[in-house]
Image (cartoon, rainbow, N blue to C red; front, side, top):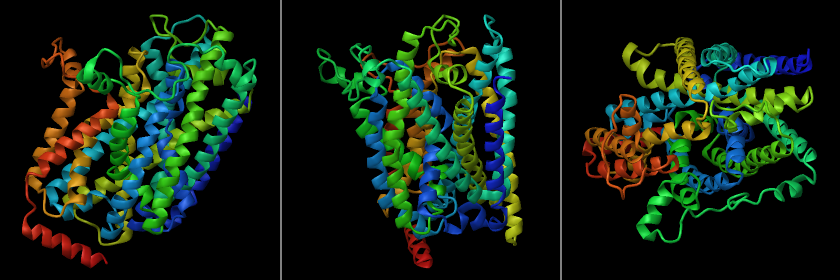
Length: 546
């Protein structure tokens, strides 16, 4: 039984996570307690929880996959924009949410503009987060598929078999996470995140150390073999000689990881994910005050840099390791190309020693459960605050409100599993898909519209209204869908080519989508004036909170 020791480690991890989560049940008996931990969470725990949300299983496997496929660190350039955006979020977004005392951040838009913008924005979040978190939930099930390959060497797994193998893992992970999230609320999410980020850091550290110790010469020995023109590159301007000005602009917009994408595209991405996404912001609002929330937000951005360098480094070292230790059983697509997404989990299962292997697998589960638990809590909170209470009325007692929140958690656990199963089906039939662009791309189509409306509300006092915001958000989505070629992808399923476009127009990559959506939405929203009575309502609302 080669995996017995690993199974013991994983079982112990599950038991500890459930114990921590369930221990918070008694402190989640009110709406504020369940959704925001009564705003009494220590800043360092909020910091750990933010990191746990950012480093999902998609990053845990996807970033090493990017390192393996590209053999460079260009992805880390995006961290520059992450830091810049965090300054704006800490200085503008978070203080406004504390000032208005919101539980769902889309309540701020309701106060600022009206009920239509409030519920449209919340609806955009619910749909986008459901799709994005559902696709992330699928990622760790790759381990199950690889174990099948190891137990059946030489056999090719059919797409249907791969799908059913992953289905069992998806349901199990979701069920366990839903139990402690439903009972313990945001406190259970955050304190389990603290343990999960500790396990994750140790798992990544051991993986890096193990690879370096098994490559002759360590890092210097590995770099000696990486002599390609883009190998080990960190900075990439994305420009080329001979293309001219517009040719280079087009080329940059069609690249994923460039310095321009870091300063422009990535900044807008992080403003959206950390300023307008209930999943992330809800963690920040559990801190005792806006200053502690800002500290946790900024430090998480700094901590992202070494973690990202490590996961990319693992991917690069994996490429060198398998150049020196050729393995015919490496997971491959039907065309014979090595599946970069599956190299790291394959290495963990076949090379790492027992116990350490279990720790790394626990690290994968940590990222999955950390992302899933917060998604469940935030989706339930937004749905209940923004829709359920509006449709069915708000219970008079705290116990009644928490009961509805727990119902929402179960509801979205079911929906997330459905999305994950659909993703597993698609990827089992398209094994060459890269994970990171898929996950990050989902946000790009809708979060520009969301950010544009929030920026109108936060940076102006007299612009924007319910009617204009609807037009602006729809326009933002259409522009991004067209510029990113979504129309061609969708119409291609029906055998047509989609809308025609001039040759000079770029097909933008995922780091740029939110920027173009934000600019479009903000520009159109600014054309509409906020009614005087709504301006007065906003003033009175703020006065009432102070």
